[in-house]
Image (cartoon, rainbow, N blue to C red; front, side):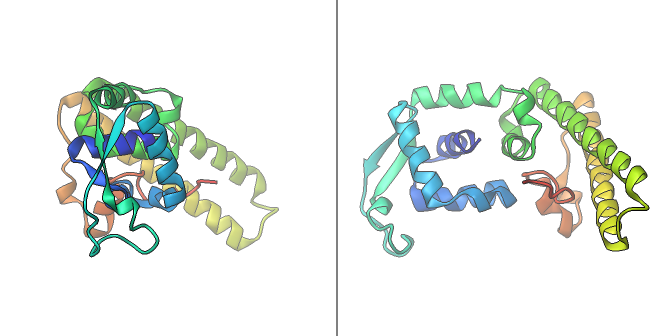
Length: 208
């Protein structure tokens, strides 16, 4: 999924590695924890080998290049014509991998550039995935109430409420998509506006 994110950002403008990592962190929210330089640069190398991006040398800007990365700061990455085609192909995918936390978050981050039919398929798939998790947790709670302590039970109930909130959020988005309306995140309370920019709304934090 980081491949989709990198190609999407480079389609907006060329960047060097440090800028790219900062933009990935901003764009992807809580997914950013997985984006280290040890992950980023091998991915950039792979994309370059595939012909989807290219690099050019430039003077390093010492005011923004972080320690230990001065040489990399002199390299600017650009998307190629083939890379733009690859980005479009990735953007059009709506399979099961786009329903999971990381996959959904990255795709949602680029929903503005995704066609409505694909957005709707991803949202409906994500809703089914969260409904499955919700029903599974309900089943666990119905069978385990007398076997777990009060704090664990409260944590499980909190998780159940989080799933229910996300299902409602997804249903609202699906309704908007079907009616041709775009969600207006400007109306979100300040503590929720950041959650609307994916990875997925904050409510469910069940990644491994």
